[in-house]
Length: 204
Image (tube, rainbow, N blue to C red; front, top):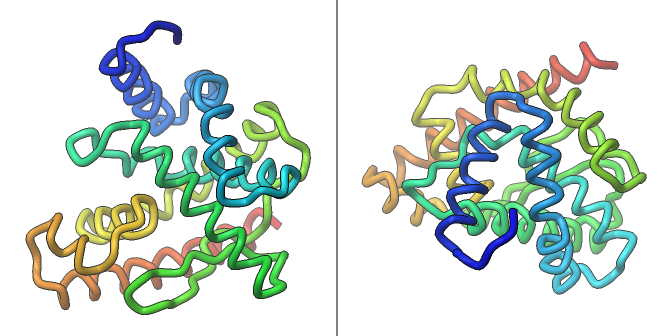
């Protein structure tokens, strides 16, 4: 989409994300074309290795496909949500590299410093929207795992892991006690991990 109206662009991105959440691969490719250059630039500021940054970009779009349903325009603008996903994956890439772990993907939460496997396999090393769409088709099977969680668990995990909020910040956003939020996140992640493991076995 062209044009200089920021509000119109945000609405356009939000509309694309809502279609992606429904499994619309055409909207996914349009979102990639509209945002990939910007997100790659953001990733490069954190992960300056171009090859690694391009790998991270693919991870970002696989995550976007899988988590698009968690985007809530009432909580943040579409570009802010996309930037958060890209920033978190770029930081995660640096952590993986420092730990010499190159075969699994981890997400580290700020409060408990816990690392949780969120994907069973790394995406392809070949950049481009066609590769992303192929990965997205596989990721669609995993999207059902999020649907199996309760609404509170889904929202808590989305805020913590896709918008990068701490447990305290999630509790503030949801206006719930900190202990309740931690319980939602912990139980939701365990359920999600079990579901992803089953999905991984089914896909292998």
